[in-house]
Image (cartoon, rainbow, N blue to C red; front, side, top):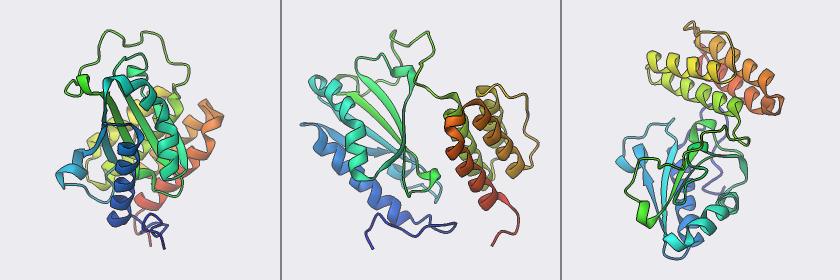
Amino acid sequence: MDALDGPDGLDGLNPVVRGAFADAVLGALSAGAPGSDAALRGSLARGTADAYSDIDVAWTVPDAEFGAASGRVPGILGGVRPLASLRVDPEFRGSPDRRLFFASFVGLPLFWRLDLDVRAASAAGSGTPGPWRAAAPDPDWSPAASALANGVAAVKAVLRERPDTARGLLERGFARVGAQASPTGGWPADITRLADAAARAEPAQRALAEQVRTLAVEYLTPNRT
């Protein structure tokens, strides 16, 4: 069995598999642009990650390579493992020196989303968006996919015993798809309602919505086996 092909199913959250995958991503990114550097951030970098933690990566590239390197991200990530989805944060879509990608991968848990922050070297210390922030909605941004990401994050929050965080995530998720609904604290049902609302709003997201429903039922149903 390949190091990246961990066990599937409910108990397949193997940190060794996640670590091997993260290492492969770092290696592919570092090789993807001359003079670039890829490094973990967040809980994996701090050593405080739990089984549900996602993968945060910072990729710093030479200024002259920024545009080309950003354009190669889909191919680089897909070369590590087939992509299930890849989204670009619209906040930075017009930035000359920063992109923020959200990627999920075929065969890996939804919990293990990759958040990839790509920056030109001259902007590597900056955390503030500049005047390029788009005023108009990004036509390529999917509110339903964003809402479903909130559903996954809400499952994590419940598992981590953070109900207020889960409630806020679901409220924002419902708002993103224009659903007149509020969380009740019956978490599997709440997340299922969000998934249903997202699928109605954007039928193209039905497959992801079904995965989110399954995640909520499997991980949050009491006395699951």
